[in-house]
Image 1 (cartoon, rainbow, N blue to C red):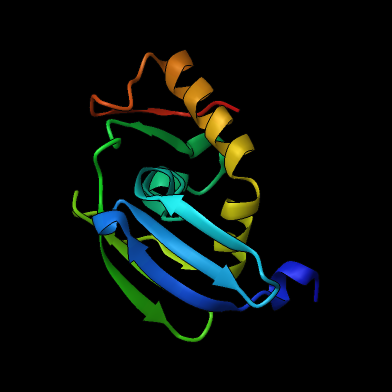
Image 2: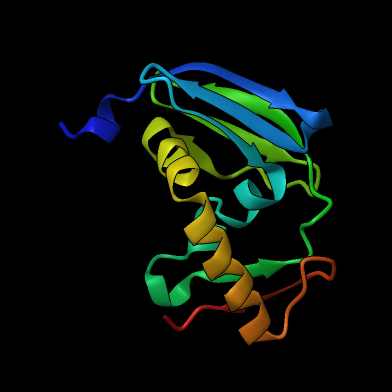
Length: 130
């Protein structure tokens, strides 16, 4: 098992009125992940598709909030958002990766939004052709 697979959360808590999720891991790593970031990076088939080509870039989520955090077994949580999206199951490994790679992933997301003519404030989506 690689290091990321052995990362276990010691705390998962909604902060900022659901605008962010704080996740602390046994290793000492702690990330405060914005709801917007988690929503647009949702591991759901609805967002990710079934291949990289089918992945959607989703806009208009700047104001989204997390309204529910539900455990899924001992390996993940299902996040529910106030836009009624609730099909993403975030594993501990994925949450750790999202925290570690937040600056890089966010830069890629905002570049994809711009390339697709989408906005963080206006709803819309486009398929990624990466």
